Amino acid sequence: MPGTLPQLESQRVQVVQKMAGLGDFRRGSITSIIGRCGKAHCRCHQPGQPGHGPNFRLTRKQQGKTISETFSSPAALRKAQREVAEFHRFQALSRRLVEVNEKICRLRPVEGQEKLSEREKKRPKRSITKSPRK
Image (cartoon, rainbow, N blue to C red; front, side, top):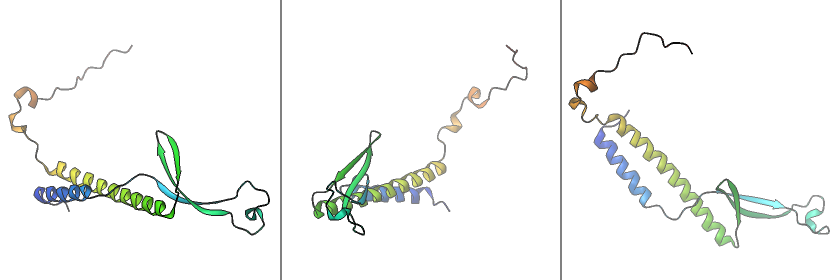
């Protein structure tokens, strides 16, 4: 059920205020990678041994290329996790803002419709004659 125009405008203001309150954010996803090193006699190459890791990386697309970023410390990982979570909140608020604006656009009356000239009111009729074949 769509709300009234003033209610929807109030919702839009609330969403914009929440967006203004967002902290630092960045795109991407954080993944953990377990891998093997290049040393042949390392324990990671022994049967039944897990590889090295987990190593966490932030991966994102930039100008069509995949960019991966590793973290120097657990604190840097936690910071990136907060920033990515904040980006997800930004995306959800953006979707909500678009939804509310679409409802507002549907409910808002058309302005100036009563001021149309006679020519604007008349729509051109389609021609009933067929165009010649080429």
